[in-house]
Amino acid sequence: MTIYTMTEPELSKFQVIQQLSEGKLTRRQAGELLHLSIRQIQRLHNRYRNQGIAGLVSQKRGQPSNRSYPDAFKQYVLYLVKAQYTDFGPTLACEKLAELHNLHVSVSTLRSWMVEAEIWTTRKAAAKRVYQPRYRRECFGELIQIDGSDHYWFEDRVPKCTLLVFIDDATSQLMELRFCPSETTFDYFQATKRYLETYGKPVAFYSDKHSIFRVNKPDPTTGSGMTQFGRALQDLNIDIICANTSQAKGRVERANRTLQDRLVKELRLRDISDIDAGNQYLPEFRQAFNQRFAKVPFNDKDLHRPLNQFDDLEDALTWQVERTVSNSLTVQYDRVVYLLEPNDLTLGLKRKKVRIYDYPDGTIEIRYDGHPLPYSIFDKVQEITPTEIVNNKRLGVVLQYAQEKQKEIGYKRSQHAPSRKGQAHEARKLNPAARQTGPT
Image 1 (cartoon, rainbow, N blue to C red):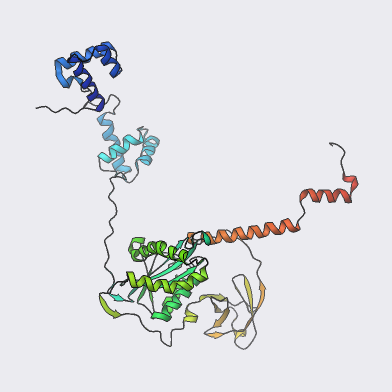
Image 2 (cartoon, rainbow, N blue to C red):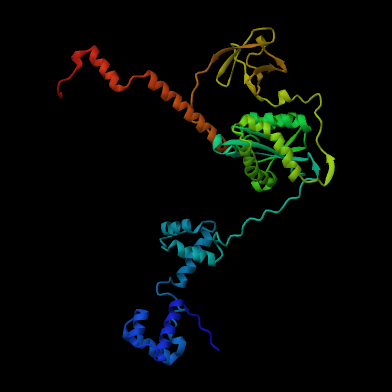
């Protein structure tokens, strides 16, 4: 028994020719159905009578194309690709073959050759990366995943803002929630302070590679190589671990998706339309959420450590930088020049390093070796607006600030600056001779 493979047009041709052989159709009718001439229908009919179904199958099937490249040319191209361009994609390899070797072949053809030779893998055939599941940590307080979720939490009632989420890895319990305009170090300082005052110090925080948690510049030549948040945790003897992928901290990522559904609707039902009111509601929501979704840890031991007398949260959770005192006893920080009051201590600090503490409430304190130094503000450096590198999570806040500033400047100009037409009119009134009666 012979099996023939036919395309749809060939199958339609067979059905029509078969009806022609049985006398159900005339040659003219068959030609109209297949859009062929009567002579071509007769040829097909004769071939069908002599060869059967095989006579209606394309004779080119299984034969090399008349436009195909010689096999020697194909093998030579693959030899060059394997020898010099093994890590090149088909498009770039095709360009280099034409540019450097004067070998011209289409990208699609070269891609099929490379796939056949197992030099290249198509996107569809490429195996998807497999993420192995990770067991929960055994103890409560062993690992706290933290993340900021930028979302329309208040829908269209408030511009997009950020929710800081702290979740325990062992129990999936929400430990801390806080709404803020954007994901900043100071907001993490305030959320972390509340967390530590409530639960104590965990073993480690688990975050992404955001610049708040990790210095992403390789081999920094200046500074300590540690972010302000990382320095604060080090002062408090808490480790911070940065996940390599978002899947690694899937606990908090999945919690974010759940919150973006449930919390948004709860805020809508309670008609909460601002960040402050939202923050007041979050403890109630967190308690209800944990009652429903929190898990029982494998080990009942709580690894949180209580704060001791050496843990100064006020000082640790501040922005701290070092500055050099000038010969005139001035220190510059954040576009402001601070003048140290001359005394027995400050007079000996010329060209020495002092530490500036910038507190979340805007208070500035200057210390040397732990001793506060009296100072006064000497001058504010003229504000400039250079091209600023902005993290994508802060982009919305920065654009909103830019729009408000542009509107303010535009309003001031429209109120105080006369138009060009008005300026020209005033000039003609003051100097009638400047009027022109015709073209010059």
